[in-house]
Image (cartoon, rainbow, N blue to C red; front, side, top):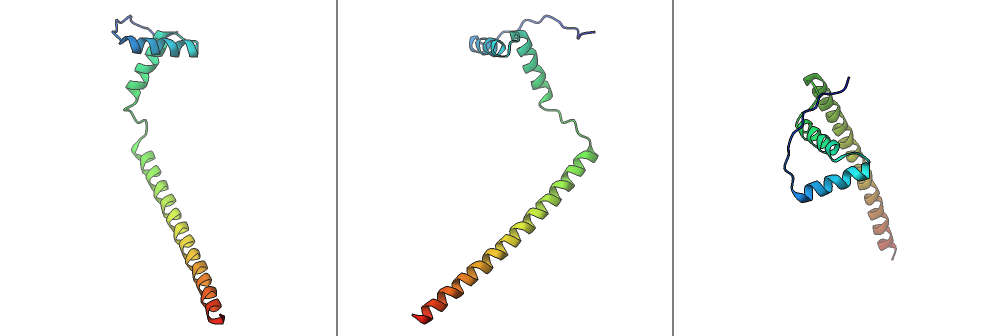
Length: 98
């Protein structure tokens, strides 16, 4: 069976009503449906549906990923230093021959 609804009077700015009507027209719904969707989204916006164990797992995974990224960056920096060092050696070798 469907959800029970209650009629409620809401005062909207003219611009809000116009935008809701346009959105409803675009989505082929009603102004009331779009208003209900907006209210539901607002009510759920502050809620996080995650428990402490899941949050701890996410933190651990994020920490592992960050450590891997740092290691990759360190490796890339070391490689870049080696390349620049070889370039400098070649440049100094050319200067000695000239």
